[in-house]
Image (cartoon, rainbow, N blue to C red; front, top):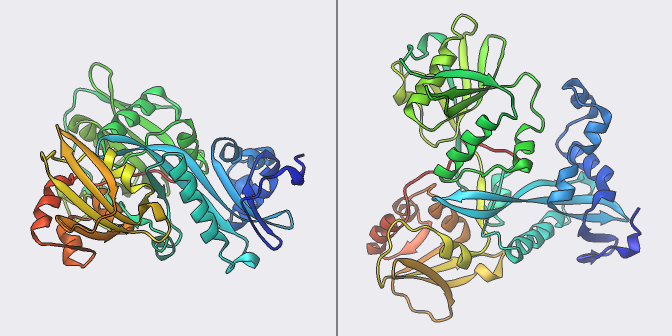
Length: 414
């Protein structure tokens, strides 16, 4: 075991000490996760987990992620995890810090432990060149106060068996495959490279995608007549309901083929339930459009480094000799607080911090609003109308032209 005297503490507050976790902390790490997320060993046994599997299931987090925690008299009291990931931002692949495992034992709450950890991991992501961070919120107001903002929605739909699409002739066919099928994974990779907001799944991301799923989950791939994989469906069937975890397709042919496959279960099911992460309702595509759809906020994001993000960002147009001045408010990251000038020359954008107070083409907004706007979740005019940004009215035309219209697709959970 590691000698406690050898640990490097980032902060000390009386008997509370902050440090990075390592493999020697695995048992305490797992205990806090299971307590905070109300997952008991019995629950895990019921889904087929063995004792040793439970113990080591989250070990990759300690080995591949940055895990920071507060210890009270050497007992883990609070922690946070940052996964090193990549995400498609308007067709540009950026490094992304995936925040998860934000937990505190209740007896230590109200001491500002999470806020202190958040400040540290934002600094960590900045120092390690993660321009943006994603997280799944347990409290939207809580994370908004620290600069995160909603950037995508999850649409949940219910389709009755009588509303299923009629068979549509396609030259290919659907085949069930293993959950680690290379064809299945390749389809997602191609899809993610083509869709703004999508996570580029590496081995760690795939592990998280399946972490606590039940053993009944099935993957099915649509192949065209040349046996090229063009789409997939992840689902299970229970109590006469066809549950869709995710449906992805690269072509309309694949979409029709996958719905043909679902409709082929007509005699076995009474309805189809699933989640849609495209940001667009599905009803329009059905002959009987009176399906049920509900919408809820899903993932939140935060620009970690404004200067780096604005430099890497793929603006929709490249106006020659045009300058755009952002004045950003960010109470959690001082390097983002202030004025940034974006300019274009020879078809390329550049961004730099400026100290002057020039107000030409000025746009004033919070880090939350900047994130939502550049991620395409809300358009500049909408944000202006709802007093989220302050600018001259003529600038809305420029912002609408500069910012791509794509909505973020994000279907992962970690």
